[in-house]
Length: 401
Image 1 (cartoon, rainbow, N blue to C red):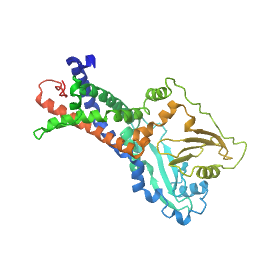
Image 2 (cartoon, one colour):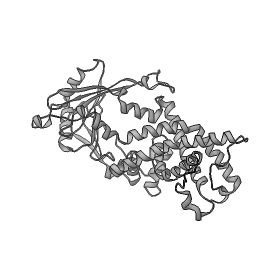
Image 3 (tube, rainbow, N blue to C red):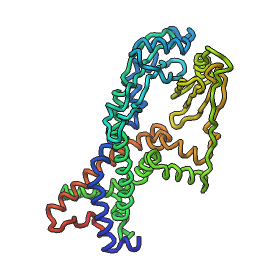
Image 4 (spheres, rainbow, N blue to C red):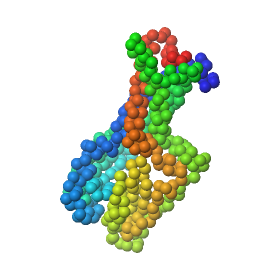
């Protein structure tokens, strides 16, 4: 560690670590706690939303053909305001409901930098249907659905673009704190390294010492997982981190895949819709989808766009269809992306731990929970030192000084 292990160097790092923590601690706590919840989003939704996500009586009518997508859309439109326009329909295999989504973000001049989450959408609804009978299972005001609110708190503190910037900067600060924390934790004498890596409490150990050890030991063990979670999250906020992930994954170059600019031709077929054909073909071709969505075209020359996922950890297919004939115009498989792009697209699954299945989610949950404890234990250390110090900055946080 060289200069950083000198008394003066450590004092500088300590002060930086302190003020970064005080500036971002509350936001890190909120983001970490909401991250704990989101790690098990799928499992929690299955538990609490099973009545409208799954067809309880599927085997009683599963032999019946699904209703056409346009008919499901018509039924869904009858359940919401007549001015709401559908922007897409889900694509799921047997035993699952389908939902029609009505989504319109605020895009007028009233959408400002400082904006409360409740004013970000003109409307955002999902109507869940039994695709075999057309039965309406639930009309959901998606904007105020629990997990949507959790995600909005996690990404923007419910404050729109301004909140997104605050969260992104705070997570970047958190990364710097993890690095400075490791520098401060690192013992001068490597022979006592094992002593610094675990709790060595006695019956007489005071709570302040226990709190101090909790901060340092937990910070050490959570370091690398927290870095992975933080950096993948930051890749959606800072293009240079995203580009860096692609560059690293590509082994030192920034090559990316070309995505074509496709359009439907309204002159070839008039007054014909390929929506039913595309939706039926997708369900027949990909019966084991974990997640699938078909975006409805807004204009006469736009394609029908679908993105599908057969594994929870990553999206696997991106497809474009002619909106009139239902003809497949373009398909991109995950395996066709560059290694760097694959690394970037796996960012979400790394972020929530699903890349390692259930064990990975548990690790992500624990890392987020323990990360939430660091601002608390760090604040208590500072407060205790502050009360007993006559200096304007706290004395050493670390026993290894």
